[in-house]
Image 1 (cartoon, rainbow, N blue to C red):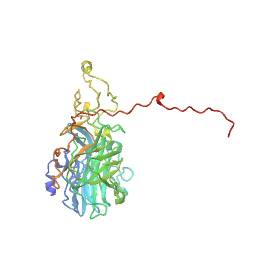
Image 2 (cartoon, rainbow, N blue to C red):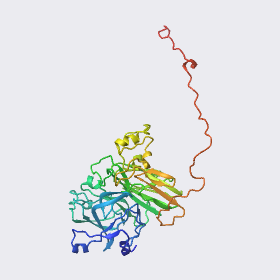
Image 3 (tube, helix red, strand yellow):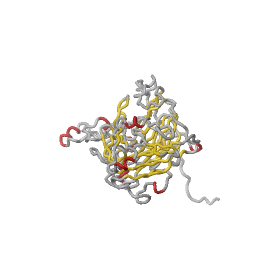
Image 4 (tube, one colour):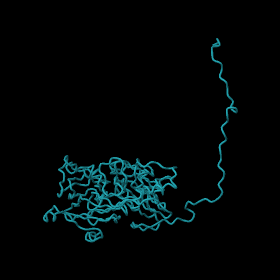
Length: 460
């Protein structure tokens, strides 16, 4: 893609680092920002070694410039507003206008130089998670480098030593800055044919993040350790998460990194995959086996691959059931079986905001809430499919496989058209009487043996 054309695209604008002089700015690559949460097309490399680019779910790839054979990037750490899903926005911290920040893509052997401008109200650093690099470039504030003060720009420079999946995030006031959304994905592509890295037709990546945002508010609570209420793919929740749209028969790779406070078993419907890479690099072929769920632990990365040979709209989600719901209270009592009918109206005369809390299961609350939601809040379960409410939220999306999806076309093809006779349906015939087990025999029917008399007979 032409650099001039890239920068003229919608939602892409150059921003100036206020703390850097005009002379210094002439030596810096242009910082680029994104103000939308849509999935951007893959960035075809305009310069440097060629590679097959990744598609960042609800994100984008950071462009670079070549300077005497060095790839130069510019990251701006700053406060951002991220649309978690239509109807809700969050006040986060991130990079270049978004959280997560843009994906960085390089090729094995590339010399990279990253300018990092700090526009936060406090100091920061960037740690290049999983990279092999000089110790002074590792980004641990106070240990391997001075912190980056507000308004200053620091430079990181190293060689991309090995292909694989990496992340970037602060190692400065980490509890706050990570809880506020400061993270990004990094992909290093192999420089040529690699014995353990096969070419694929579609290559997706996203990060897992958790936030605790009270209903009606917009800023995460940074002291939360466990009780997060928004579980996200790239800081988006269903139904705001984009789908993974592929052509039937495509070889598909999905790269997932986990920067939450718990593990996530990521499950794909309709297909089996192999884990072909971890944070440490590609996995040996002898260590691969078929799976439908890969557990991604805290700070880990997993890369899975499969052939998308089954048409349909297949769910892809975390298999922890609370992680496929949006903001919910964890102290709500279980009211299943407690009959509220006839009482709600009477109670609402005294307590206008009173609502039924799941007397027949939590699906009651998906679309039939009896009170309005606070501003800037999403229902716990939302989104619709062609057959009705999806009753999902959080870490949930769809893998859409179509035989007529063109190569390189990532547009959403819409709902799957099921062939006749392939959709589950209501049975309207007569139901047979259930088979019942014969009653257990009573004491009178049992052949009970009396125990032998105790005592010594004198014979041995």
